[in-house]
Amino acid sequence: MAEPAGSLPMLKHFIVYNPTFDKSEATEHEKLLFYWPQDVPQEKKMNAVGLGEALVKYTTTFSDIPCEVLRTKKTRHIFYRPEPDCWMTISVDLPYSERPGKDGTMRREYHQEDVQDIVLESLLKQSYKMYKLFNGTFTHILERGSREALVHKLDLFFPQYIQSLYIERADIVDAFDGIQFLPLDKNSYLRVQCFINLTEATFPCVKYSVFLYQDHVVWSGLEQHDMRVLYKYLTGMLLRQKSDAGDAGQHDGFVTGPEDLTDPETPINAPRLYVTMVDATDELHLIIYQTNGVKLGLLVDGSFVMDLAFYQRLHTFIAPHTKYLDNLISEQQARRAASIMEIQYKYLYFNHMNLAQKSSFMTLPKKAGAQVVSGLAPEYVRYLTDMHSDFCRSQEDSEIILKTRGDWWVVGRKSDQREFFVILNVKNANLIDINEEIRRLSATHFGNIFFID
Image 1 (cartoon, rainbow, N blue to C red):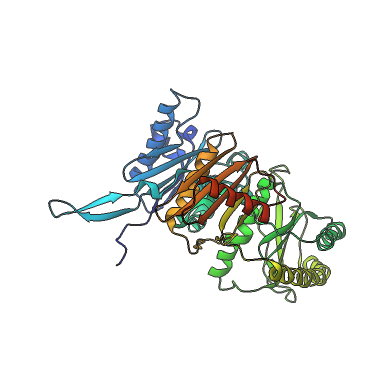
Image 2: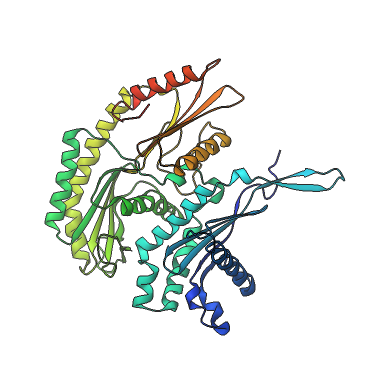
């Protein structure tokens, strides 16, 4: 049967505004900095901004924490203040199904449980962090330019970024926003580290480096909060941009930089980045170099002139190293894959301290717009997300166990900033049996991770 129209959650609007620009009735419209969709009457835009302002002012009379979530029958609104006086809002139309009523007319039933607050909150915060990485803070832009400069940058960035949100497919992986790491043996890891150190010593303009293999982080010189955002770009948004440009396959050479190393007139494109470990007025340039499974990110001092000769020297130096490391890691991963036993249970693991995530049933890292769940009904993913939301509301270690009608057990455990979820099917089991199964699974596959029983 065909899915009824409107049965998926849909982005209603995405807003950035600053109430301090509202100096008078004549300048009220200036507090609105960005609104999507853009082809909406101005009056409707201002009404949406006014609703957000009213809720924030009203709730602050009762609490120091302003309104963060508004739930209505048909919509969900999330409010976020990333910087003083600057607000961001995301609103979603809830999914629904249509059923015939007693009078024969079709009635809509809205599914509140299909849209989870913690996922939308994470998506909204991620959107700000991604904007800040490539543009700097809102305050920084206002101090260096003007309101018009900020509006221009918002108009350039967010319409394209919003296309990568995929509200209808957002889930617990988006809520975690974690990093997939690649464990290597000691010698291989030291070879990667030696290569990074040698590259930064040979090219002093390189301030920070990131080394990935098959979209798994092997080495990063960035702080975790910056690496988290850059990782999402390297494994998700960049892939989407290359796909839109018709170049999403295997790449050998510069992904960002010169298009042709032999052409003196070739265009050179290296995105500008702002990382929090340097002053916001200092710009860094991102060079991405890829050799099969190896993806190398080099963040170069923004004041350094990166002409074609520089890229040619850089290519000559790093190409032999990345080719060698790609073969080395590829062989090691092939041996490791042959020795890994198939896991019968479905599990998801996340570490809040280092942002590491692992899963036996989800494709990680999550690509932009990809359907990450395989062989698992959507309601089970919602169970995991609800458990994660409960864990976030408490600082205490805890455990939640849920049994479904089909003899499936869903177990969530929070222990020392780590979250561990297991989905298993054990016929005629009781709580003692399930606890023993979880203990056995933890000892077998997570023996080096400390969990509090």
